[in-house]
Image (cartoon, rainbow, N blue to C red; front, side, top):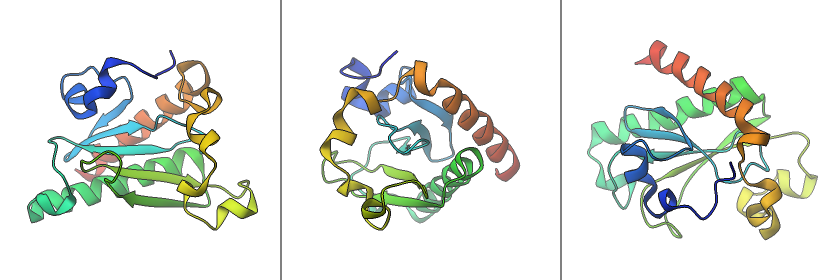
Length: 158
């Protein structure tokens, strides 16, 4: 299954809450850990909140704390499963104007010109070429390993 141009993408949070978002890895305290649409950096994930809000600042202090903790737990899972050099965390909301956090593994094997820059500076082709889009054929094992690790971590930490 290639996950592009399907109905659940119109409202990813609603689809996650209703069990119709196939990219969901785990239910977290603050929302949902999901696979990133593109996997040119294997293990790229996104944290969607349980409720749609514009920014992190729209959450109360307890909700913010849970959200940021969940973001870091996803980073722990990616680190354990993918063994990257580091994890980058990003919250923007400029293109998709609702709170969501990007969790990117960064690897030693990345081109030197990209490794020292934000992932957004990768070419448009990396973001849009079907070769890099998530598919069960290419990425199901990675997805299953992330699910397993997230389940272990949330049982241990919650």
